[in-house]
Length: 178
Image 1 (cartoon, rainbow, N blue to C red):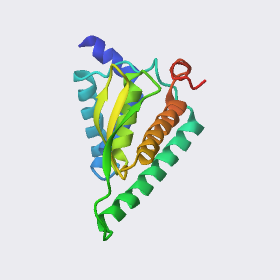
Image 2: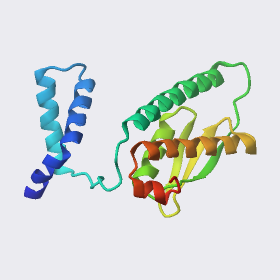
Image 3: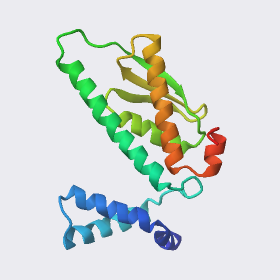
Image 4: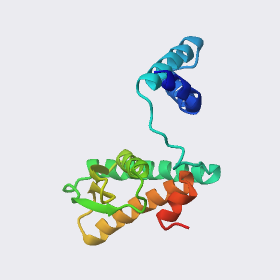
């Protein structure tokens, strides 16, 4: 328990992020929300310590902003496309499960790429294989091999943008991006 309290000092950025999210969830920044978020964050971080991530992460601010902007664009474009599929007077669009081999062997980036792909409307991760580095996604609008390959390419591009934004040099080298 003592070690976990010492590790809190190293987790100060995550604690601040947690407090900010807490304030967003409660609808505003005031003393009550900040203190409540701080207590909740410290409680969670002491009871459920995070695994060390520092050996895989380094934030490149410009690439990170570009990554976020592209993610927001993909989010909006996919939401419009899925919305159109829902209201158009035509049959349901074809869908399929697409397997995508990830460039990185990191569990962190496999998981994060899967989460990002699931957040974008029209695709959801149905399986992630840690041993092979494969993501299996159910995607809407992939009735032909060309459309399935386009979905694969979009997932790989998403992973590459993520890696270039926050992965350390060693992870980029392992993924063949340097």
